[in-house]
Each structure stands twice: as structure tokens, then as C-alpha cells.
Amino acid sequence: MRQLEILLLVIEHSSFRKAAAALGLSPVAVGEHIRALEDRLRVSLFHRRRGGSPLLTPAGELAAERARAVIAAVNHLEADLLPLSTKSHWRIGLAPYVSRNLLGRVAELRKRYSDRTITTDICDRESGAITAMVASGEFDIAITITDSADVESHEGVVRKDIIIDEPLAVFVSQSHPLAGRRGVTAADLAHFSNATLTIAHPLRHVTDASLKACELGDVRHAVETDDYSEILASVSRSHSFACMFAESGRADTIAHRLIMLDLAFALPAPQVVMLINETSVFDRQLRLAAEYLANHYRSEAGTQRRSKSLAARDGLPRRPESGASLFAGRSEQAPPPASGGLC
Image 1 (spheres, rainbow, N blue to C red):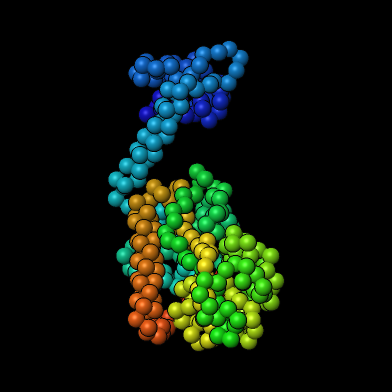
Image 2: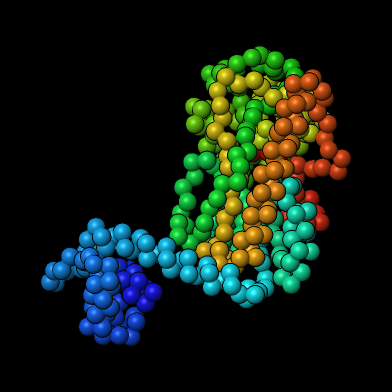
């Protein structure tokens, strides 16, 4: 283990001398550790050359890759063998839309892990900002929604796991010229304006990215507001459209007399993702809690979609669930502004 750690430190510093200084050893001692590892593995790990940074051989590159995996596995083992993690306070960040399925489950976690203090923050910020909060340790884990093409900018610091896609759909009033038409194309939709969130809203980027991918990035904006009711009212009394989570149609669109268009093209679906800080990964109980939340969200979303699909097939009306809301507040007691269900 010591030799593997020294190998990775030499690679990190690109220098035997700097690695030795970091370890408090002499460069000769570091060189002896590397030679001992080479003797054990029966390969040369570095190209020997004077005056330059150490350069890995192909065998050295493979050894470095395996060394990282070995050290990570040992760290996991040490953490899993602890009777209790030393981390007593878990901080969980949830995007407002995803929290509708998870706040009750967080309450279950509090009962299950009564020895931990669990804080939940309904964080209405874009995915990049939430990822940065996980990277900095402000959150131990977070569940948010991101554009499917979003690039992870904290690789190695934050682990990102996709839970499920959240499909988008286009909604219009019953009097809209495209209402009831089958196979609506992007060219058809481009003739109409879009009622949408303001550019500052964290979910606006998600919708814009999806529409842009379908060559609808330049459509006019009939309304730009973070007031969800105002957006729905605008669509219901005009020929504008709204791009929303398809799941929003389970309840709100019935009340506001909006219908989902039958599109001939697929809107790229945003993803619900689990973000976990690299240090939190070594807390076995926290990993299990994160998996519990992810599995529940996946199961709940799947059940809702199957139910809606069966209702549509059988011609049954879709009713909102008793007590259900598409929105979740910024705290667990208070509801948020009514833009939570709209992308």
C-alpha cells in the first residue's frame, strides 16, 4: 500500500523530488520504494531519463489505474467496518420539483437513522450551482434536475448518478390551432410563441436546451415570468404554448383546461441526478440513504407514468391525487412560488 501511495504521489507531483518533500522523505528513499514496487511487479513503471519529469511506461499507466482502485477499495473497507460513521450531520439538497416525491422519504430516513441529524434544503438553484455546493461540502448529497447534455465540471470531487429521465411535453389550450392534431412538427410549433420562465429561473436553461435541440431555440416569448399561474393563464387564453414536465399533465393541466400536443419529434428529456460528495461516499450509512432516496424516486416516477399510461389507454379521466402537489416549498412546511412544475 505504501509503495502504491508513493507511486501515485510521484505521478501527482510529476517529480520524485517534490513527492519526497511532500512525504518528508529523501528523493533516494522515494526512488527505492519505486524500484521495490517495480521488482515486485517485474516491470518498469517509468522511462528512465535525466533532467525531465518522470514519464510513465504503458505498464506504469496500468499500475497507476489499478493503484487508485486498490486504495479506494481499502478506504471503503475501513469506512464500512466502522460501527458508526463519525459524520453525525447529513445535509441533503433537493430541487423543488423532485422534492414532491422525497420529503416523506427523508422523514423516514430520520426515523431509520435516529442517531443522525438530517437537514433538508429545498434548493431552487441551477444544477451547476448545486453541484458546486456538493463539491464544497455544503451538501453531502443532492438530487436535482439537469439538462441531458450538461457536462459535469467537478469530476473526481462529485459523483453523479442518473436516477431517471423526466420527459418534457408541450401544452396548449383546447382552442389552439394545433390542438388535437397528430404528429405536430417542430416547424408547426415554430409559428407560435412560448410562455416560459424568466432567464434567471434555474429550470429555464433546461427547457431552452431541449427546445434548441429541436431547432426551436428562436421561438418568440409570449410571457416570461416565474409565476406559474400566469404562464398557464397566458396559454389558456392565447395561441401560445408552454414546455413543461410531462408529469405536470397529471393534475394541473386538467384544472387549467390545457392539453398535451402529440409531437412528431422527441424533446430531449432532462435527467434527475444524484450528486454525492466524494468524502460522503465513504460513509456507508449515507450511501445507503442516498440509494434509498434514488430508488424511491425511480419507483414513484415509474408508477405514476404507468398509471397515466393505463388511464390514457382505457380512456379514463386523470385525476390529481388527494393531497398531492406538483410543487414543494423552500422549507418542508411552506409551499414555494408556483413555478415549480414548469420547466
